Image (tube, rainbow, N blue to C red; front, side, top):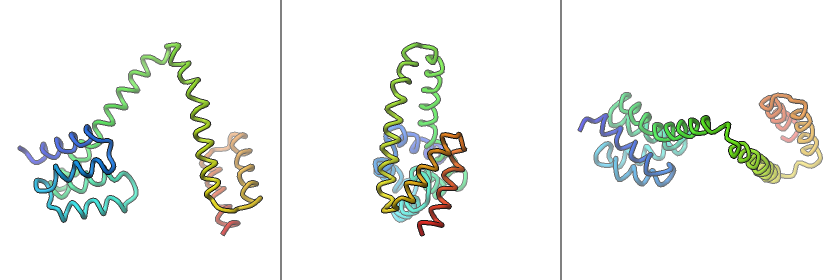
Length: 171
């Protein structure tokens, strides 16, 4: 079988059968070691993809694809890795686009919105609690940030300014 077709099939199969993460590493080990890379290269690929920022699965795919077939192999492995989730998301978007005028979709979203808001608020509270003891200054910074957001300040700017203030006053 052609090397690039083999790379495509291996990474397509892995991304169809797993949800990435540790499960995909085990599947990839069984599929790639001995045919695409040796065990030392695989261990090096897993270690490197773990310490770099970003998606471990995509970095692992590119590394193994590159080791087996150069730049073209890395691109083929990357394409095969992102194809299943991309097709799935496009399918969902197309279905939602067709159904967006349905009454039950509107009701579904109205019910979903408060639940998601509470989940985000709960996560924010957990992050705030784990931030350490910051006293009244932290509460003041949080309140000022909330007021800025209510006044429709760009969220990225609010977060950036709060981070700079945190570095200056909480160091």
